[in-house]
Image (cartoon, rainbow, N blue to C red; front, side, top):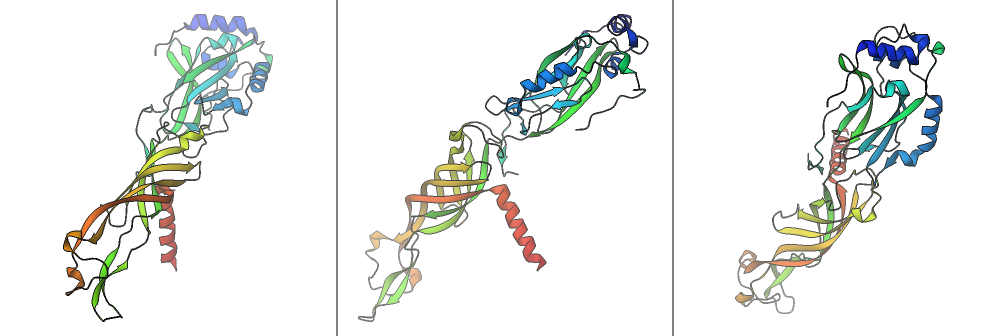
Length: 348
């Protein structure tokens, strides 16, 4: 960005005209900022126009800061800042100084369309030199509020600079900082699932009535419980997992999972309803499981006499599809829980 510049003589003349009592001190933009107009009335009006709900809008992705030229923050949002939020900086300054001030993003640039899956993997600087100017004797002019929109802050620390235009080029005269939270395109979760897909096992038993050895179901004849890892894409847009989006439908999304039991033989797909900010989700859908059954071409059935070991019972694998229900936990929280549990067990 190119900034207009002003010569030192013109700047000193401007300072002397606007602030005659401080003409000997105002030899640079930094000195003007040091002896800046307190703008009490303008700041009071801005505070009244910015109640807490007006400082942050999740629906509009907008956060408002009210600042002075030296970077002192008068008002800030109570909510956390997300990486897709537009930062609106309202800079209150003396009218004669305002035209030489700009607001810029000083922290790293963030990629707005980056893919991020949950579970995969303010100090104000002081000016150097003498800051003991007798501001009380300065005759100030009026104040004005300028609005500067800034975007694309990288996750982590966001930093904004107030820059003064001088004949020597732009000079930073104040900064302020804030945290920037990551937005996720989806989430991984560890889920406990109950499915109606039966996975029977077969063996042999002696029939009491005649003493024959017959084929029997030795287990898995009812619904079963599984653990699975699920991926839930956020179809309604990227979001902060610790903040309510304002749109209840954004918490209802498709989900896809693989079982940790007999990996490769079980797949699940359905819908996930997230409980906002809790890291817990409720799941409902269909489970496709590959299970054993007696080969229908063998002529054998459960209860038929069988000569030979149980390992020779003719079986085949088939796919069965039934409903499942489940409860998921954010994979990051699940990993912390397991780590804490294992660590607690080692200390005993």
